[in-house]
Length: 61
Image (cartoon, rainbow, N blue to C red; front, side, top):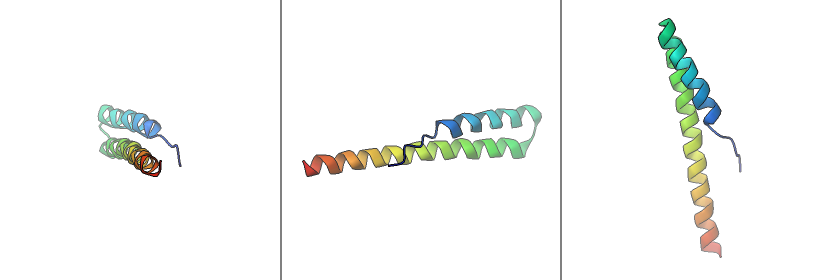
């Protein structure tokens, strides 16, 4: 199983989003929001995988 965490993307995305707001760069702000959302999706997918593996493990034993 891939143990990739979305934390890095969430943090970097938030930084880019804030940077875009401060500099009034809408493209940079949007880029940050997208990267932050990617991190959230990665974390959610990992959570779903973990829950599925636990359920399968419980049914096998």
